[in-house]
Amino acid sequence: MKHRLITRKQLNELLDRLAQEVCLYAPVRDKTGTSWAEIRRADEACLDEVNTVEPAKGFVFPRCEVLLRFDPQGNPVEPEPPPQQVVFGIRPCDARGIAFLVKFYTQEGRTDPYVRARREKTTLIGVACTRTAPTCFCLGVGGSPQGSEGLDLLLVELGEELLAEPVTEKGERLVADLPPAEEKHLTAAEEQRKKVEAEISLRIDTRKLQELLPGLYDTPLWQTLALTCVNCGACTFLCPTCHCFDVTDETVRGRTVRCRVWDSCQFALYSRHASGHNPRHDPASRYRNRIMDKFYYTVEQAGMVSCVGCGRCIISCPAGIDIRQTVGTVQNSKCKLKNEK
Amino acid sequence: MNNPYLPVPMRIEKVVIENDARDLKTFDLAFVNESDWQNFKFLPGQFAFLSIPGAGEAPFGIASAPHEPLVKFTVKRVGVFTTALHELEPGATVGMRGPWGNFYPFELMQGKDVVIVSGGFSFTTLRATIAHLLLPENRKNYGRILAIYGARSPGELLYKEELKEWEKRSDLELVLCVDRLNGASWPQREGLVPNVLKAVAPKGENAIALVCGPPVMLRYTHPVLEELGFAPENVFLSLENRMKCGIGKCGHCNVGPKYVCKDGPVFSYAQLLKLPPEY
Image (cartoon, rainbow over all chains, first blue to last red; front, side, top):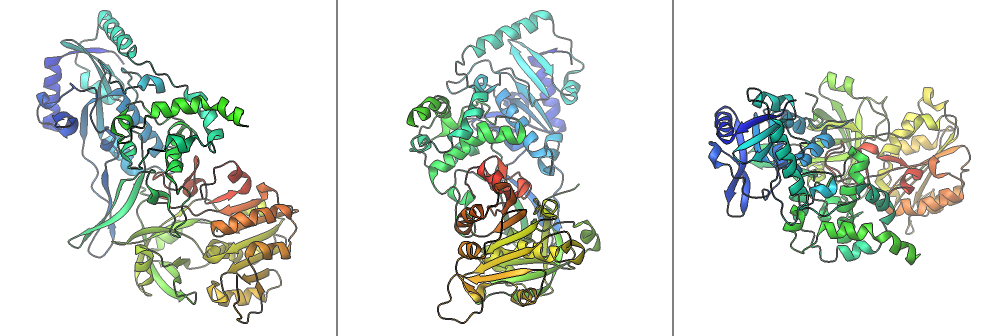
């Protein structure tokens, strides 16, 4: 699909039009930075921050979602299909997170109809990063500040104009009438990519990590790494790829719904059997599960590392735990283990 | 849309209180809709979610065999959902979704001896397995069938009437045992399941062992089976981790990279040796 050129004015017109036709979401300014909200006009969108406080995963996997309603006779009724929605201003790391979620939820075997329906009804318009935060490390886990994976359309800001790269038919339809981009625009975008990528120094050898992690299950390192962890679950709730949920029935004024809500493997209750037995009873085993899941388990399950390097777990951790340090320690631990033996 | 979260309605036909403590009940369920019955194909070892609007849902092993007309579940009263279920009487409706997971390795078992080891109320899917294997058209395909089933006390054994019938059969060796007798009279064995297994000492040659029980029983049963010559790939265990979805999405039941609901609940011991002990 051809790269196109879109001016800021044209983009604003496009967003204004979309806001009339469908639910349009974008980052908007709030007390904590920017957060996702429905907008009515293009100028409500705010791309000043490197990224939103919360990831964009809620657009395909909401924090709380009704699975079924029960009629007065107790018969289950499926909810209305989700509405058409357009998400503008999603960063490449969060788009990769959605790509992972969609793959995980719709891969072979049983497909989750809710995630699939939401992704089908959603158009994702990404905006490439022009700068980074100190906690960004997308490049370290195979992403890029200009990555287009998971998106329908990627925009790269070049001053008063934007380079538009359609990724899917859905994205193509949005920009089909615009003039094609010229060579100089592609070059400018490429230079910008190199400049932003140069700001990220961390590299993680995820393949080496996959080889190492299975053998590191019993290392006492986990105790040390998780020592300050309070198992609050903030890292998992703010993670663009964390997919765990709990299913619960809620009855309000006699009307019952069965809904699913985000859950976290960092909680003790998460894995506790009805008998009281808990396979992951101590905090270190739960911290280990999170790291193993990101860099080893999901590779086996869905063929993808499930860390996109957005850095939110680092920013949000009340105990100052840094996943980059954990990964670094794990990567360098093999020789230590050999010495121990 | 084929929605895996949508339960089908089941009518409770019969409720049996199974034990002296009265916290284990067996529910025999009939499909309200004929078409749901036609679509329900399973083999022993698989499980399903039962649900009551407002009380939630929980997974249980299917305790009936595929040829039986009613779908049987034995449920211990421990939480919100199971308490609500225990209050229901015949005629009431509950939701069911499934069957989920895999089943015992019936193909691999053909032509071999089958040793069933079970403790406590996890006997459910193994009860289904025995009923399935004892069908005349199935029975001829298997060698000796030995079942060792233990509970804390005689009153805690499930399916007591059926066990009496099974004891009379010549094509099934049933060994019942209880942990402690405390002076009560009991014609069967006293002792923990792993010790009874050791005493009965079935040969591991050309045999498959199916094991289901509480984690502590599993831990002490492995070494005995190993001593008896059962290779890890011929020992199958059914795991019961906490789970919410049954289709490998909610995350809860993972054992390393495997999900008990989707990749299990039946695993060979050889498979489990490669996984972390998170069950």
